[in-house]
Image 1 (cartoon, rainbow, N blue to C red):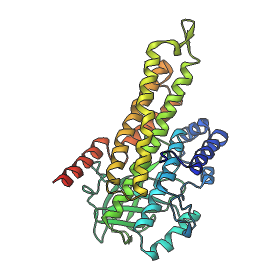
Image 2: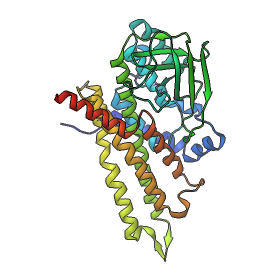
Image 3: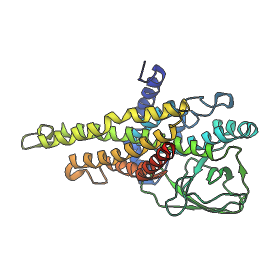
Image 4: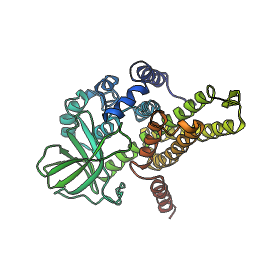
Length: 355
């Protein structure tokens, strides 16, 4: 039995890495921070936002593991852009839309004629379907931490009883900019006062699948970012000299690097399996997604902090690239719910099944 990626998935990794090495190095990520830009148009040339849209509607027809592999490489590059929001919105319409809704919306999303995002969180850090309150035929309330960028003009709204599509600019919808820690992922708040909307045919089960996909993609992004932190720390330790030798010779630095490696490198299989379970519609795919999200995003923050320590006095400065990854780690941990929330959710599900 083969537990590795396919040749096509390895080629996907290589093509994304080559693009960022040649056209979008970390210096351009810094440009996004300095100019407060959330994304750049040339990232759309990769065609990753449409990977999960079925080929019959003009999309890539990829698997969840395919898009998770792409998310890992984007995480390693600290890539700016609306990838996460657009993938989740397209997937929501794919799994929850009626035949007519899919035929109407998905070709527009695949062609880039419409650009959608996902709206989940509500005030009070409410991310889960069991605590989200907005529902019903008249949408009233607020959604926070809504990913935008690249001219997003459509939101798929996660409700307590399903999903709905709302167009930006609709009467009764107010869009307000919000401050963000990770400037590569700009966000807004949406206030709803009964805007015109379209309910998707799928219900709560479809909405949960969308959130599970988000958890898997955040785990994949976190693994890519954490592994990059390790690479940056190793590279720095091999050139920084102290007391006449590189700091890579010091046992304390070796232990720091070993701790990062032991924490980070084995965790790749967690998000691989979580994605595979979703592709295969495993009974506990949702639980695996939660575990991967909880564990790997925590390891990402730990890896980023240790990498900063290895860099010593320059590690925390604005001029050093590591802060891109530390900020991204904080985002990955918080978005779609904390590790504590996801572990509790998995535990409650297992307790219910045991009883």
